[in-house]
Amino acid sequence: MDTISDSQRRAPEPQQPPVLEGDALAAAEELFVDGLPLAKRYVAHLASSGIVRGLIGPREVPRLWERHVLNCAVVQELIPDTARIADVGSGAGLPGLCLALARPDAHFTLIEPLERRVVWLQEVVDDLQLSNVRILRARGEQAKEQVDEIDVVTARAVSALSGLVDITLPLLNGHGQLLALKGRSAAEEIDKARKSLKRWKVQDTEILTVGAELLTEPTTVVRLSL
Image (cartoon, rainbow, N blue to C red; front, top):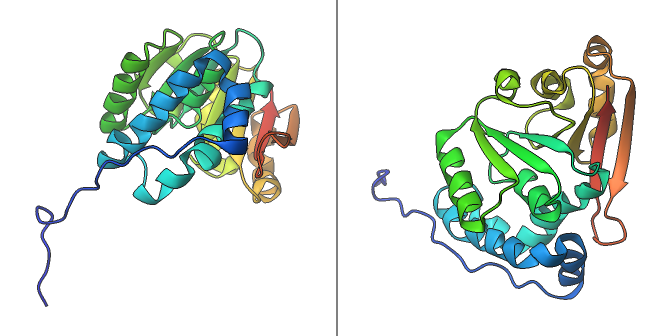
């Protein structure tokens, strides 16, 4: 059998962004308001250079709006006015960039350890001219000395909650909240993280559903408050 070398494998092709229409358009208009044109440019980046450079799988393109961007943007309702947010393991900007586009009043530090992702994030932020976003190359647990006082930490698809608290809660310096975007396993993850939550003196643990009035599949968020 012939084998295909890495050099012979075709790189993923850039794609056109999915059409924003119907209920998704209505949700995007409500969430991003005047920032919707920038949100559309962000999705275009995801579908093109995000695919080519391996930040998003090609099969995700048709559902970039519903499954990813809007799924993240609805979390903005949990963020206090003018808050300082650290998004840990930001990857392709989910949820950090989505939230920064929806909440220009807040300031976001996107924390990502992989250089190729950091380079891509900075290119997108520069193109969108987002003055409320800073990109930091670091691991979450090592970033405490490099960020200003943080009110909220966000994370999506980074780690199970039992490990995530050790990565994220040090950034809060004893006060604030973690918003972890989770799925159906949220309650189970909380149960498995009981010892860690006690060690970090978490005062309140909640499972919240956000975006039910806008999305067919609303977003599940675990909120931990110190």
